[in-house]
Length: 197
Image (cartoon, rainbow, N blue to C red; front, side):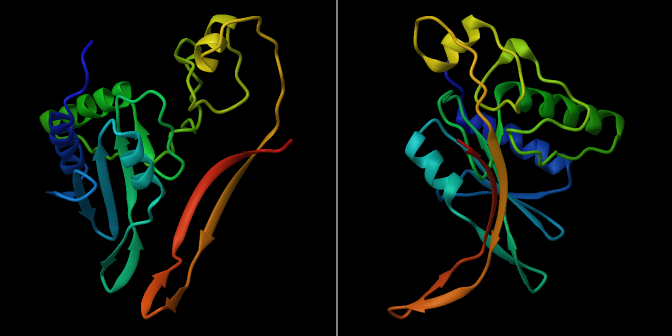
């Protein structure tokens, strides 16, 4: 299978977002498109450039909507299997194809449709992981085969089961300060995992 065509992916994601009620605009900046619906903003980046993906993922973007500052959600579509976002929602190939199919069904049959803003490391309530698709974005606890462990670790050799506790965190910060005549905004919100050992 070849590399993804990012321009075509952005066009398909535009159709998905428009089906979900977003007004979408193509962008020339670090991301491909933006979408606004009510008091919600979504920015989309389609790229395989690891540095660009990391910069986009870690940069908080805000917009003034209805007289108040709103933090934008971020969606990333990439063919780079090594990239794992911390602040953005990662759409894998399978998730993109599923959203394209569901939005097309909604347009054809007049059904309601919305995108889920579930972080890439979480499963929707009641869902179970597909063990055959072990990757970096699985919520623990899971069981994986020795073959999958070698694939994820990118190391050959014997496999050993290790239980490593992790803490999930959510942070919110706010404020603004002036430094050397420039205004610095501290508005941010995010989630992540940290090794508890």
